[in-house]
Image 1: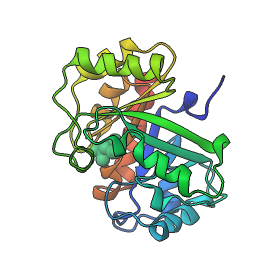
Image 2: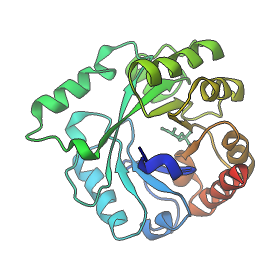
Image 3: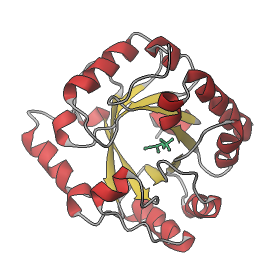
Length: 235
Ligand code: 1GP
């Protein structure tokens, strides 16, 4: 079965709580060459902030997915191609594995299952907000991460496994081990991608490289370099 992310080499994550860099516009953001935009962040996200970004990106021709951090910020916008729902496999708190999901399904009038997908996160940077929030056990070696990846794919049927080093460049041995552990699932990598070389290097290990803070810290020109780096890795 083909999935939207089969062809994604590069994903740009827009944090609705952060401003764009300099004079960048959302039109510029959508024209960086990225394969898809994920809208989501960990802290201080509201539905209103989400909707502002969705509306701005909706006019452009790039797949648009929301990655809600909690059930309260899910937006029903028609402009979205879908939802990518994180479940944190190494979370300390069950709320972040299935609890938030249960609440969402409980309070939703109707679930749009055709547009709802999950991402099996393995959170690896203990200093990242997502690690603190979820109480993630980041003290994992490559073998353990590979085992989590296999559990996600084989036992829980996850189509996306996401090795998350948010804020710092990850260990390529760990990411490579996760890749080797997977048969069909798509391996997302995110964390510390900041230029052509870092994108090119991680592109050799992950199927899809996610770029986040760089957009807000250095802008669309820097992001475009990471697109080139990733695309060159897959050639
Ligand atoms: C965050 O994986 C993404 O969820 C990207 O991380 O912000 O470090 O690029 P960075």
